[in-house]
Image (cartoon, rainbow, N blue to C red; front, side, top):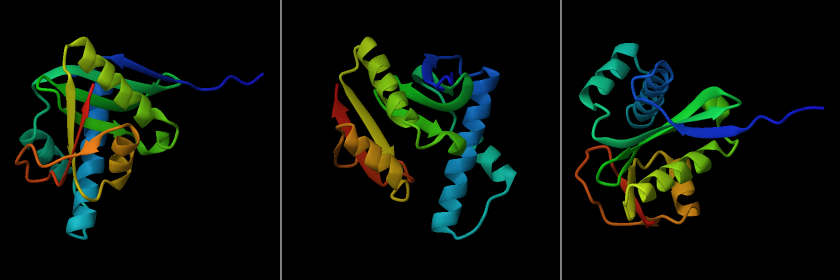
Length: 158
């Protein structure tokens, strides 16, 4: 008999070893994709560290870690003002439904905190994220912040 691996989504401290490793992987992925798409070059590890230092993960109302069969596979944060941040599924775990479950976990956390609208910004090149947000009922809206890397904006009433 073969058991099927499953996703679990739980709140976890931001400074746990798994959270820190997932955040570094998030930054490596997002920065590498940026430089590959916009500057046609690869990145050095110090550029990932610089991005992490410049864009601190703060003001969180919730931090969730997604695990595939117990292994840390993704993360997402919810800012106090109702914005999704640092949404990430590690490449080895993609296309298994984890992003959808993680997003729904953030929505549940927002509802528990009395947040009635979730906002998300993303870049033009992150098309898989845009597809997920639209499939999960988010509407594309006018810009709601001036983040230099935000090119597409989404929100959903909860």
